[in-house]
Length: 633
Image (tube, rainbow, N blue to C red; front, side, top):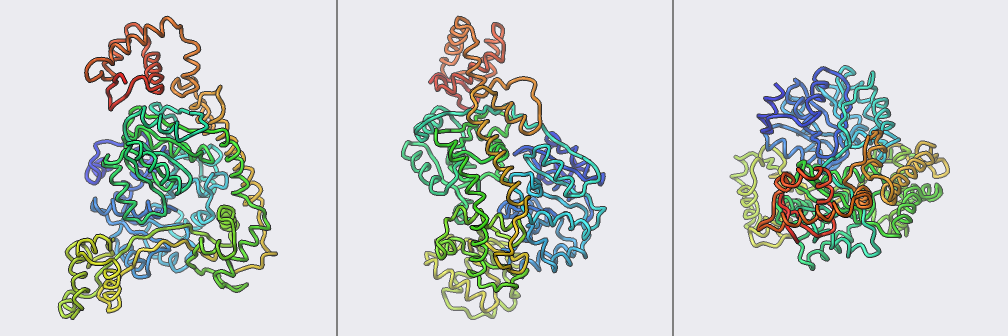
């Protein structure tokens, strides 16, 4: 049946490695931990069982944008899925719960902060739940790089939905300590792990040292071909590097969390259609992006951990073909990594001050506020109290871990609309001319408006009607006021959820596991990142694999360290003859396919020697890889 479901809804004839084993474990009712690398197809491992099981599948995930994308994708495939998070209106939440109650919805995506809402939990008690999925499961482990206290509410959820309901925990990166902690915190009766090796045999890890990274970036981009992602750590830099590439004749776009949802979608789609070669992005880009033919991933700025790096670099070469993961490093980067620890863990006195100012900013009296959800303008907050943004943001995250509040960082919601008036009553409406024009355009442009909330784009409507955006907005508000439609305009809003009543700052306690030990763990992760990047004697792949608990037998032979070692060991005469053979073959009109070149050279040379030399020549820019063809530059 699982193969039938896979073919019917996804059109695939077979599962990827480890997917079927995880599905079988879940269907047998066992608690299961799945460790699948980025692009390994984690969502299939719970979406297929969800369609086979009789009740509802609940998926807890912190990624609201990914939640929306998966719900939209499932609906396009004919699967009814709903979502619950704080950014929804009451009407949207009620509609979603009704669909769960009557058995129409098969999958419900839930943000972790919803698990503290008692009314929501009471509703869950009335539902028949067949499977509980914990996505990004490393967030439940205090040993993990992205611990979130809201995830600790998942274990008690098991008692509400029924302890016999199996749990499927999924993550792309977890050390052995984190894997054990995940299973302990979720109450697994015993270890049950399905893991694919962290080895990416088609991915070459390269580190390039440069005082001027922009110059090196241009060299890397121009000496390679194919689709690329460049990761940076600030919105400003996404714009600067995208503009630099465009000036140099390379098609590029900037992508970050501050863009409007429509703009994000449009840029992402242009990149996926290969209309744009390079996406310069913060880590807001990549989750759920299913583009298999990324040939190059560049880290212009260093991540703070190997878990983050592995996930982002792993977006290259998901089609199994050769890809490069390049890190650009300058002399200053070691100090930058070290400073991130102090920025992430400011002084405890500063944390207490931030807590007090949050209460003042939101007008929450001491002793009150429990379970209140407040919109929180972080930029205005920092401006009013003259706080440095990075340490202030870190203080809010630490207060979240300590359980005093929950800081839900910036989430951008798209505009949504549903027609709530009956068709009979709509015919009798006497609307102003401009409102009538807007309403008719909406009805023509979007389907399903009478059954559910539908994402709309006011800019598209105004362009279509050649009408000012403000006029369109006012017309939609008018329709909402007369209860013809339910209109939820787009907004970008962080939230503060008061998980306890407001305390006096002197009563705040920072537990060891929240501050001191977490700081030690971050120092450990930063030091591992430094070793990976700055060591010139250890195979990059070996360093990465050992960090994740594997023991590779041999160096990868592909990273820059291995290539340099090969250069030192190779016989100069043989190398000269091999180069002559390669250049002779790639000089043919139109070049030569990789397989054909190997076939001609391997009678006289080992295949791994030829492959290693090819990578060196491509890396040095002496030959060019275009698709599967090699050509002389």
